[in-house]
Image 1 (cartoon, rainbow, N blue to C red):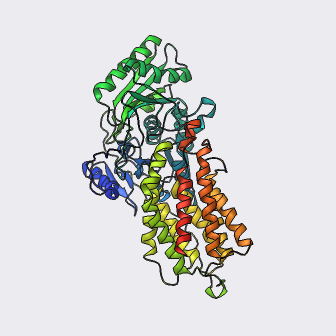
Image 2: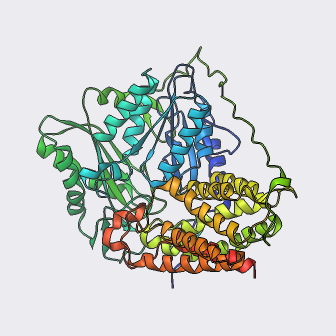
Image 3: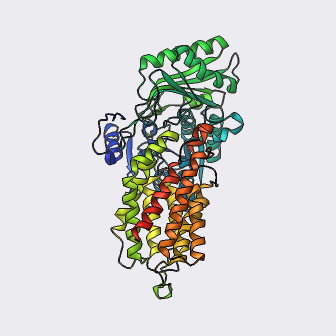
Length: 580
């Protein structure tokens, strides 16, 4: 029986707004919020006209990252996601709007599928509003991919250094493209590797998101609990530090006379006593090579809830990076140099935003009416999905805990809970396609992560597929299922056999279209889609993952079903049962 973990929280669903309230209350002289969602934390002294705006962000649970690095000389704003989940495009866009001083905005984040999807959508939104926007995904984790595929590497504690360099470059007046260039340079010169000694647990589940034996450690563990490159017996601190440093030293090719900055980072449950023992060994290794430690930080800078373990990060310095690293900053999580006087005589002018064209409603008299799935019955199907996802939340999270970060069930439940609230407010004459558009926005804003953009794109694809329908018959229901699949494919880029939700949605769509072509009604179409999704989900157990966080596992992902494919089956099963 799995032991429940203990946390000092109230309701799990309230943990992020309560954290933000407490964080702002603790640093009222530095921080405020902007935007309607309450998820954009902004520096009071930082954003100003003529300065490139720096927006960082990611999931909660890594404190002091990311909000702890907002302040003068570093980030102008941070977008705050749910625990271990990327902020949504709206969270990020609100942060971008709050710091737009007319010189452009740079978005910085760790290189994870969900973050890439959400920050890219936010970039698109800001660009559409007239704000020049660029992005840099930090990819410093040497354990997550070989050097030849560095673009696939995860961003872990290296965020600390890349954010610092970009923030200093913007604060010193560098222009947009130059800030991006310097951030990319820091990213290229930064390497990290971590080790886990024990698991963490999500507030919503209260269970460890992976298992390690009492005498085991995981080398190369990610900061969300993603499995590393190998599991070994626990070794002495010096031996562990040697193992972490070896690939970092090899890739940075450090030689006598080189300068570095060092970060020894605790993951949440490792004591300073242990961290300084690790730093001691790092210093011994660098001293033996004649490498100068220009700056060093030891402590908790990018945590993983209560995970036991640590990471080592080195930034190889040069004449461009050193002055930016030394540039003063004042944030809750990092202070460098003497406190700066508040900027005077500078302000942030109101943004000039390009307005979008208003959408036009379809004439109901022109819509096809055949089929038993009316708008009301469709809403009942969506409510059935929400209930089924909640019922299976823990199971889906357990599946994800084996090959990912353990939050898929939680994330899907958050999204469908937001959808349910939207369904409660729909006008009586709302069309199915319009309902899908509302669901897309609700899911996207509530979830972030990778599921947010993917399901938002799915709902929008489904909306386009049935926009000529007042009700759904067999053919239209098949078009809706196929529209969901097409939307996911258009945004995510996964292919069949990658071990993702596509391995369930694609066969479901194909089966639905084939059933409709054979004359099946809407219920029979969903039965065909449900059965194909179930078969596809089960088949993912035999597939080696090639996408997302589980791709880092390689052959270790075989034998486990993909949680996204399983939630697809749950979705279609609930839709079919709602018509019985």
